[in-house]
Image 1 (spheres, one colour):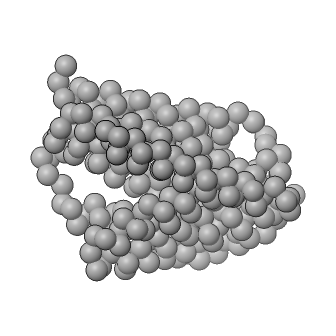
Image 2 (image 1 turned 30 degrees about the vertical axis):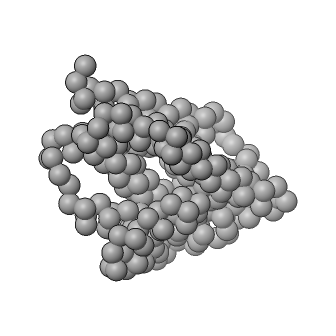
Length: 251
């Protein structure tokens, strides 16, 4: 079996994780208001943790221009919201049952795809360097894929997209990861500045989605459990990241 075939198999495994998470998020055809608020709270905590614990610190060490790209990512989603004149932080009424605008769902999808594309590049680059290292990195990425699939599907559903579209969002994360894995095999070398800039932009986007959108929206559920669910989302990312680092150190 060739190195590329091994990399492809690992990519398919991570894609399955994304799809499984998305399916879990859409099992309820018409989720209750409290369930929706809980899902958004968990999603907000998870997204914020990804940005603050991993993406921003990683970006800051990659060049003096990276803070500007983080700000650009934040502003891109903010300007998108303003362009559509969307009032996001209010309870739904009988004429508007969605807490999130469809355009915001699309922005979230782009941000998550950017993040998973960079994950794929990491796997592919490691696999080209050494097969064992590539497998280790693939397993590390897999830790996040089921929660990531759940989060993007929950956001897409609340943005008014159908169950099929929400699951396809999870599928897209898997496909973009596979593309990222394959690219180093095809291109040989990817511009480090480009990947650094993409990571920083995705970090800024995640900060907006978590702090400005998802967590405030989850508070519309007016439940004492929302705070715990936001913390749970944060903890899930933190613990999976900690286990990944422990695993990599052991290898």
